[in-house]
Length: 474
Image 1 (cartoon, rainbow, N blue to C red):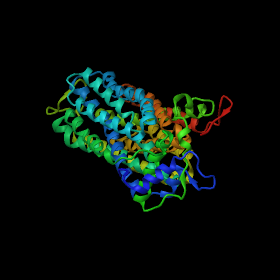
Image 2 (image 1 turned 30 degrees about the horizontal axis):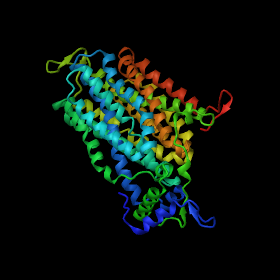
Image 3 (image 1 turned 90 degrees about the vertical axis):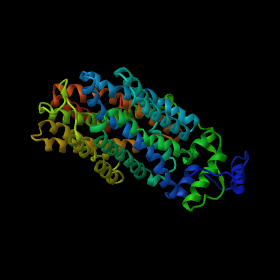
Image 4 (image 1 turned 90 degrees about the horizontal axis):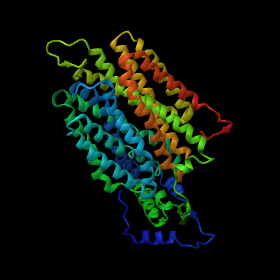
């Protein structure tokens, strides 16, 4: 997928694209028109795999939180709040870095920012496997979170090569890699945790990140970024590569270099008069998404551990009021993790037919219903089913937000807008461990009901018409 620049015709057209005084009667086309002309073909399939690898690795690094935290609690005899802090520091790092990575991508390119973020995560991910003490695991996992904050930019890069009609479904398709990543992590836990422990799991989980970094020589840069950076010649070469790979031809005429004078997005633009209300509402929606999604992920292992507490026999190694999860527990965890797939599939099917807002509303209501029912389940199987259904609903809802957000913002603000939303979501994510891993030890009803209430509040936000009398674009 690397863009070749050695063809004479391409060079000629590139130079032609940047003339200062074009003929007014000459045909012209934009980047968006070229992407539409290229359609969805081999180029997008290859890009799906590359960016999907980054997305899968991101999912693995976050799914691992629900696996290693209970293990650390048992091994190092940690209080519940210290166990929760292991997850919280990751989200603190993500919150602090999301806007940072958005700016890096807007200034230096989506491709460069994504490669740098993934390479950094792979490095500190391997280092965290050698953490000797509790403070060190906090520091290193916090660094992992800082790098992971840049991985969602893969969605921005991917979306800018997609025709409008296919954008929603295609972004949902790449989200399948997230579901694959979470399931792969649990399978690795089944194979590694009982025999080799959490350190080996951390090391092996960094392998997909390393593979992505090595594969990045084929990752293209966004033509929209080239246009906004004043490099229409590079944008044209990229677009020609896309069309050639897909067996299509560019529109006739000259590439219109209007993007070269557009300003790159900033936090100030997001909070400007035109976009302020929209941005604030999106931040609240993303806050609730992350709070509920990561809450159900973390709460699952805590519930599995709680179901087994008090059942230790002479052969079990129980200490500090906890029991190490065994292979059967991880298999149960895998069943709940597989809920990501029906959640994504159902969301994909209804997204284009009932609309973005209706999809967000239906999925979040289903999640709230499951969380209210779960504490009152009368058997272990019923509890697992509620966890499965809740995760399916919130997974679909979160991915719908990923589809919807880039469509709300203009191109020049898309990367920083998505980065800021992702960063604000981490506020919810860094709070949720203290509900899912601390409050649940006091009352499962209180913990589960907290998530149900937040979900219902998010449902109300989706259908707000104004804020302070002012309408918003949502």
